[in-house]
Amino acid sequence: MVATEAAGGEPAAAAPLVRRLRRVALGPPLISSAVVDERMRKLTAMGVLSGDLLSSVAYGPQAMVTVLALAGAGALGLELPLGIGLIVLILTVGASYRQTIRAYPTGAVSYIVANNNLGELPGLAAARSAQPPGAGVCGIAAGAGAGPARQHRGF
Image 1 (cartoon, rainbow, N blue to C red):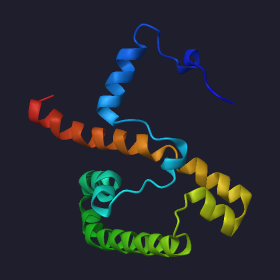
Image 2: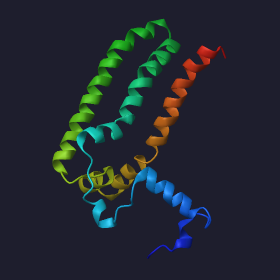
Image 3: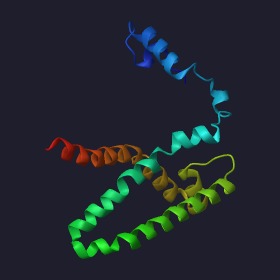
Image 4: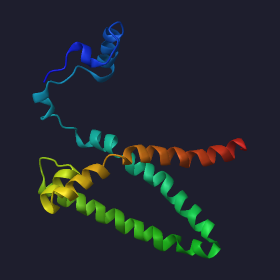
């Protein structure tokens, strides 16, 4: 199946301008066969893919202290053990990623890994669970930034 010009979804008058702007911002489109060979250098990939981790580091400790403070002064003593638990969890996830990279050197998404190792239903669940976190991380990070902004402005 091949999409026609009308299927592009852009109004006919704005199409050339949008196409030019897209080409300037993103560069020329790749042909389908070239996409398979596209790889990012490690330094570029770290910048592109580390936003999730950086946002978690930014709002995570604040959220933990807020919840513990709401639980009472005695609960604040749990901050260090919970922090150590989070460090262990992060190291475990990192080790898991390394194992996955060794097992699937050409690349794999959560669906492929779960489908190959656990079956079709867990594979579909893994694929579905991978979709919403991007939007969730953005929303949570924005919410975490809204608290200090309200305090600063006196709301």
